[in-house]
Image (cartoon, rainbow, N blue to C red; front, side, top):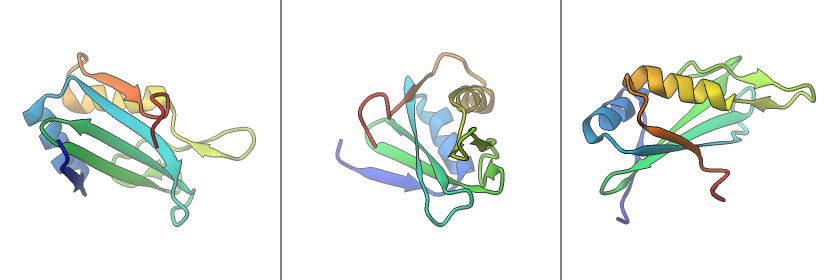
Length: 108
């Protein structure tokens, strides 16, 4: 597995998740200097190859998924891990997929 496909729309990424039914999906938050607030969410899974979806913030939500962007007490934007999980479970209509932080795995 050395191919990587960047998927540009949530609709297409969701369709791939439904069709390929991976056991797990990873997420990571990062900085997106051109977004306001400057935060992004990366979702990735593998099934023969690696698929990546990136969503950036616009005002108080992510542009494509509409997941809320929170501001902590120090003024730093972030996306709540539980909201990411709830979104994925609801969109896929399944609870058996493992949603894991890629940051905790030492990535990104």
